[in-house]
Image 1 (tube, helix red, strand yellow):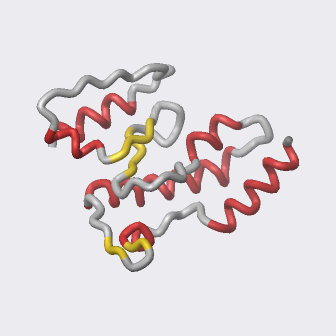
Image 2 (cartoon, helix red, strand yellow):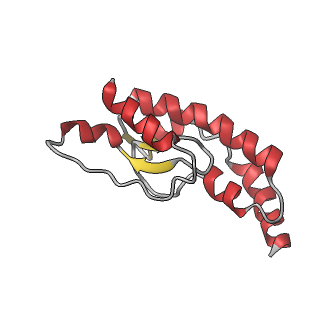
Length: 126
């Protein structure tokens, strides 16, 4: 398992740790609109993810790997809210919730890291 993880990380680090915002704007020949705040935050976090993967990967550090990888799902406004570490959560287009008349959010398992809750509340205060 350890050998597989090292092999995976070697390939992954060479291929696509730093996502390019321009590749998010075009899929095939389709132009996509990406929320400017989400694109800026995504770019900022990409450098943090790269730093974490370069400095802190150990054979048993699966939690770090899990939190630093970007999900492979299509959401034009996918963003990690909160820290890149244990407290952050992935959300698809959270800004769209501003249009909802009512919304209840449950955040479970924060492990003494309230960064998701703090960041989420700032999104809705702006």
